[in-house]
Image 1 (cartoon, helix red, strand yellow):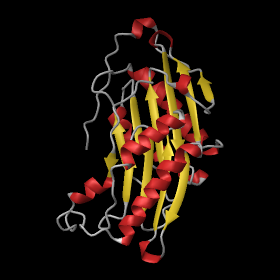
Image 2 (cartoon, rainbow, N blue to C red):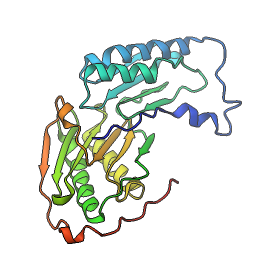
Image 3 (cartoon, rainbow, N blue to C red):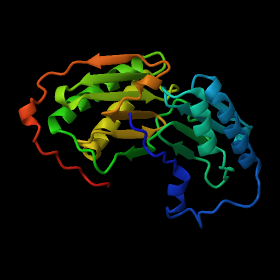
Image 4 (spheres, helix red, strand yellow):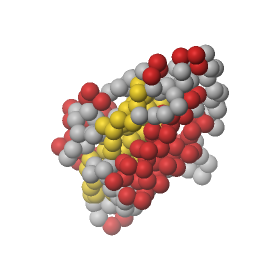
Length: 260
């Protein structure tokens, strides 16, 4: 699967521009809570690659206690996982004014909070897709159905992830991967994946490549495979019906809704 440029999306940046948050700057005082944030992030960076790409922890006491969870994309190596976490978390020094932060990228995700958010479905989401690379609408429809099938099966997998591939004849193959945060329940995982597909279909409509990223659940779709790097995920091969024939090759791609 084509590697998209990593984009770290910090929820704290969104909070900085919202009204009611003062000037949006962290205090210069290194508080106990801020120190606990830093210690927790270091624990996540250290332990996630050692725990099959997933780790949760907490640190501190009473009002200074902070909770966190991190997860890496299922089919990357422990070294790639460690590199992603270091890049996304290593430069963050904590901020007592913003105790709720989510880091979302193509290869690793993290959430930290002053409340126990372990097992809680969160809505921070990033959608990525190339401006070009439009697909035949019927091929996209079949590929999207494959992703819907993954949304139904991923919650029941041991590590809450699964890969799939589909042969689309003259158009080659389409590949998909979906996963949930392993702290989620089966029902929350299923609801998260289905909600993401419903909410963002218009953004990825007729794209040959796209990814919907979030801590609670993420999905990747492409006409290029990255399953050769897959370490654990089982690959489900799906045979679609009613694919377009060569004579249908000139069908124009559908439109794509602009970002909200």
